[in-house]
Length: 431
Image 1 (cartoon, helix red, strand yellow):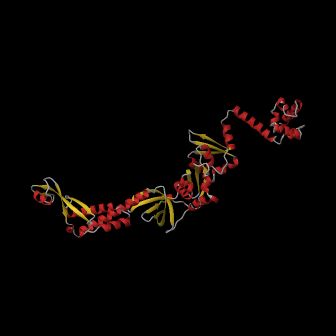
Image 2 (tube, one colour):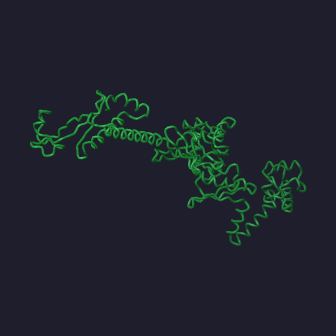
C-alpha cells in the first residue's frame, strides 16, 4: 500500500520545507494508528521505515510463553523458536505484519494522519521561522480587512495588523504592499499568526537601521526613540567613533536617509538629537528646537524643571504639548517647563519677607545699571581718550566706575587721584 515511499518523502520534504525525519515519523505514526484500529488498542505495535525497500514495516510484539492463553498477546515457545532460535520464555518477539491485510479504510486513516502530521510540521516550521524574526521588519500584501484589523499575506503565513497598531492617518487597499515590525507570533486554529505593528518605536528604529549603514555596522547607535505615530517622533543617537557625527549620519546627504524613513511613515516628522548620559543635557537636546536657559534635576523624584526664555515657551511645549511629551518619553524623566518670569515668581514666593525685599532692591540696582549702559562717555569731563583708557583697564559702564575706589581708578594710566575722584563722583551722581 505504501511501498516506494522514498521518492515521495523526498519530494514532499523539498516542496514543504519539512525535514525527512519528520515525514518518516508521521508515516510510522499513521501506520501504527491504522494497525491499532484494525487489530485493537491493546496490542503492542511498532512501525519502522525501511529506506532501502521504500516501505513502512509493521511489527506486533508478543510475549513468548509455554502455553498460549491470549493469542493476540502471546506466542508459544515452539513458534517463537522457529522465528528466532535464541528465543526464551518471557521474551517479547516482534512479528512482521503483512501490509496487504490493511483495507481501503485503513489506508484512508493513514492518509489523513499523514496529512495532519505534515500540516503540524509546517506550522511548527512557520512558527519557529517568524518567532526568530520578532523585532524585525517584514513585508506582505494586504489580503483582507476584519473589523478594523488588516490581514496581511506573507506567503507561508498570515500576519495580523491590529487596529491599535495602525497609524491613524494611514490607509491601505487590498493587494497593496505593507511593512511592519514583528511583535508576536500566536498559535491559531488556522496556523501560526504573526502580529505586526506600524506604531511601535521599534519600527522607526529598524527603518533607520535599514537606511543608515553606520547603524547596521554598530558605529552609530539609537539610544532611545519616542513616537506619536503619524505626527512626530524623536530619536537620540550616539557614535562610538568621534570622527562620525551620529546626527549627520542619520540625516544623510541633503536629508536623503531621514526622508526615506519619513516617506515610509507617510510624512511623520522626525527629530534626530544627540544622546547624552547627562539627563539634563539629554533633556535640553530632546526639547530641540527650543532654546533652554537651565535645567534643575530632582533625582529623588526622577523629574526635571526646565527653564526657558519667555519667548521660547510655546516652542518648548509644542503643539498640544507634543514636544515636551516626546522629550519626556525619550529621556524617561518627568519634565515641567517654566519661563524665566514664572521661575522668578515661584522663587520669590518661597522667600521670607526680608529675602524678598533684598531681592527687589538688588533687582532695582540691576535695572538702574542696565539703564546706564549707554557708556561712560556721557559723564562730564570724560573724553574719548579717557574712555579708551578706562575700557582698557576694565571699566566698561558707569556702574563699574561708581563701584570703584579712588586709589584703584588712579592706577589707570593718565588718571590721577584728583581726576579719579571727579569721575567717581560724576558716576555716582549719574546712578
